[in-house]
Image (cartoon, rainbow, N blue to C red; front, side, top):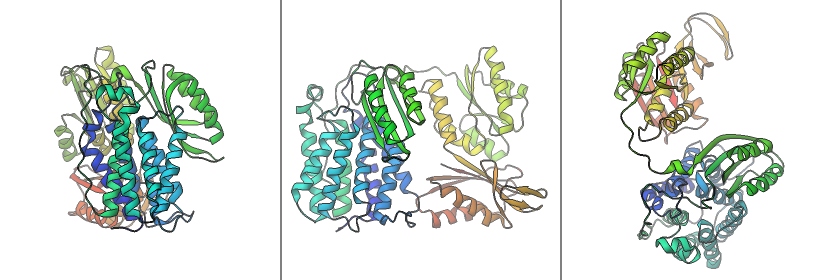
Length: 535
């Protein structure tokens, strides 16, 4: 039982809440009732909180210079991760709720009942303010009821207040069909509100040590075939546009007005103040170009995603007609790619060799993973030649085998080919890579001068570390990469790696980064005793 919320409790809450959302993900997805697809609420909430947990995997021992408390630092990491990873309307609103809590509690020396209730009220105000046209009977109503119940508890006992908040949210969730006719017709409760109830139940479990009350699943809506649900908004708009935006608050005020005139389901949350901050922008529109152009005028949009609602319906089964061609050096790496169903081409291939491999697959759609900057132009040329012969080829610009492994891990033949290529490219881009080797000659690098035999650690192609001991340099480069975040480390040991290198690097990660998973394989690549990927 806890009297106050500390950093460890914040981490447990995030992990427990994510686990609860994952367990109930399908149930929440099935609560959607609107007739046009807009992703699924359960999936969106899981992805949003997954990003929050990834941010919390960073080192919480070192406080930022602004002097926030350990729990405040943890809450800010959680909120920031949720903001950057927010998906859909519900995910964006949840990120704003978490940010409101973080802003209110970050500097407090202790988080007791009355302070938490006040913070929940501030978070509710922030959530409502972020939505251009708030609708009752949604996640907003549920968080507002939770805040009211917490305030009415009028206690410094954190356990009593969190119980009251969870109970208030549950009561409001049960009333959502009375507020939204669409919910009443379908006989379900609001999906986003259900997700928030799970998070509050998880908080009660962390604070009190008591298991949450058994949840009674709501009956899913009965939908027509090939129809999924949209979280909110009118079916008059055909596209969902979402992006992160680096801009000032003044520019965002103008952006709200402009996007509000273009569509609905507008939510903008993020940094405040005169300085440039990061905002998460979500809107449903018909004019995609105008929505993105408005962001360009306001600041710097990035991570832009556009979803056509009609394409969200379950696709028809696709015939077998896809393949992957991967360039690889090393027997172990080739075996890994072969196990993923890919056709493997030896390193430094010619255009003709790649073209032969593409045709040998017999597939009409092929993705090529070059795994080397020098091979990318060759792969692009082969793709153009294949296209003239009737084969559709897309090149995912992987620069290392670890990026290709990340890309192949998300390959899904049930998706449209173009969407699958985008998903693979995103997975590859999210995987940072490093190479450890011995210097072959004297040179001046960005990390300083090196001599023959020195151990070099290259991150994304640039020398970052120069050492004398292989193991020390390997662990140092892994530490440097994980300092920027990450939850999975992939190690590929080369042909000349000493016995036990991967095991010793793994042991170092387990000691220094206990929340990070390590996967190690015998790659067999020449020249590089170790290749590292961080996701």
